[in-house]
Length: 283
Image (cartoon, rainbow, N blue to C red; front, side, top):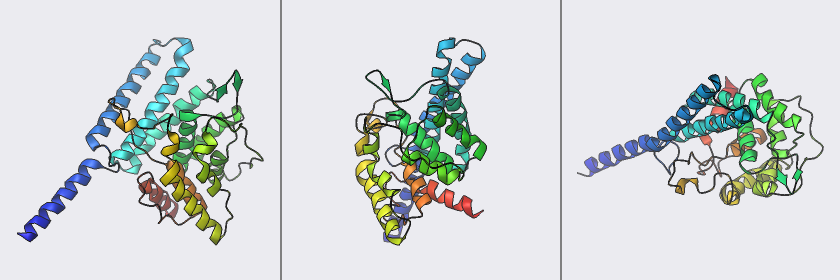
């Protein structure tokens, strides 16, 4: 009887894992509905653009929305447990639509009739995720350069952005200072992660960086997004939740070559993406 009970428990665990995927807040069925919804949105917009049903002054807003839909689809697929190899199409589509729209639209932070050479809220996160995912997926260098064209056109200089870019594009000149004012919570939201990249490149520096990334994941990543971006999406009655993943933490941890064991199983750390990057490097 005891052996029978153990077998049933193991079957239950296997079925639970199959239904839940990587994310443990929503099940695979939920994420499949998100993926389907985003696919239908993109198809609708593509058809509208092809048949000239989008007003000229709305074209780039539509392309911007399509970029967001592609990235949401990618993250939802990761949450659902899709193989990493199946995320590339969404990434390259998001990159193309983002480049077309952001090179025309000015997505920089706006406050009191003043534009700052910096992004805020969801736009900051979108750029950070695109840079991080491009690094982790080891996407084509020529394609990755499209993100740099956006940043350089609007003179956006950010410590986290440039740390990830430099690891991907070694010839990228280092920045001497960042381009934004200390406003709108963005430096504060990523405070510990920003400190992690400033530590010395020795044994003790790496230990401190690892501890800072752990603190960021435990105390800052989700908590400091309150009021903007993805915060509390899982509580919405609408299907807007696609997963809470700190892709930037995985990118920075890999770039700094720190010990990830203290935070490897943190619910926000995309460890499958991290280990995929490791495996791709060995090929």
